[in-house]
Image (cartoon, rainbow, N blue to C red; front, side):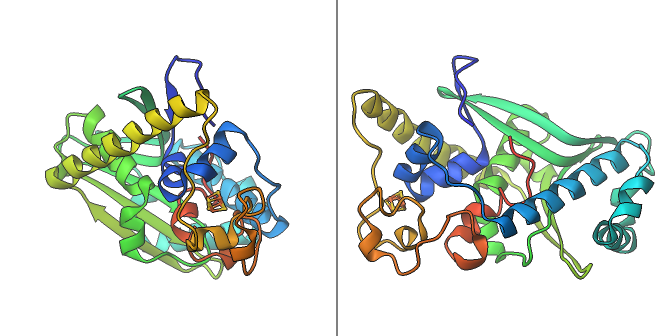
Length: 274
Ligand code: SF4
C-alpha cells in the first residue's frame, strides 16, 4: 500500500512490477484501490503460503514448530523436504552468522521509500544471502524471475544499505511444491547489475513522479498500447474500455489462467504483504 506517512511514497517490489506492467493498472490498484476480491483458490494458496512463512520464521527464531506441523500434513512434507535438501537453512551451525527472518529494510531513493522484506537473511563477515520462500505451484522461468522487481529490488537494496560489495551478495528462491518437491533458483549479484538496476529505478520513478503530478491535475496514468496482451485478462478492462479485446476477462489475481501475470505475481503470491 502506498503511504505518505513519512512524507515519502513507500514502494514495494509488487508495486514496481505493476507500474512497469501497466501504469493505469497501478493507478486503479494503488491510488484508487479498486481491486476486486481474490478468487477462493488464490486465497487458499495465499493462506497456506502465509502459514509456511510463519513456520519458517518460528524455526529461524528457535521457537517451537511442532504444533504447526501436527496440524498440517502439507507443512510437514515441506519441512521434511527442506531438512533433506538444505539442512543448513534450518540449522544455525555458526554462531557468528547473522540470521534474521522477515528482515525489513528501506531505502530512500529519489522521492520514494523503497521497502523490502527478506524471508531470511543470512550474513557473515564475507557474504550475505537473501532467501525467499515460494509456494507457487510451478517455478517460473529463471529469465523472467531475474527481470522481476523482487529480484532486482531485493538485491539492490541490500547492496545500498550494507557494506557488502555486490559480488558478495546473492538471492535464492526456494520453491516448495505441493507434492513436497523442492527447487531453488539462485541469482549471484555484481556491480554491473547493481548499476543497471539503479538506472532502471531512476527511469521508472522519474516517470512515476511525472504521472503523479499529472494525476493531481486530473490526468490519468498511461494505459498500455491497444492490443497489449495485458488487457486481455485485466480486471479493469471494462473500466479502461478495453473489454472488446478481452478473450477471457478474469480477476488479475488468478495466476493460473494468466501467463503475463506470472511475472507480476511471482513476488506477491504467497508472500507476506508489505
Ligand atoms: S485494461 Fe489494459 S490499459 Fe487498462 S489497466 Fe488493464 S492492462 Fe492497463
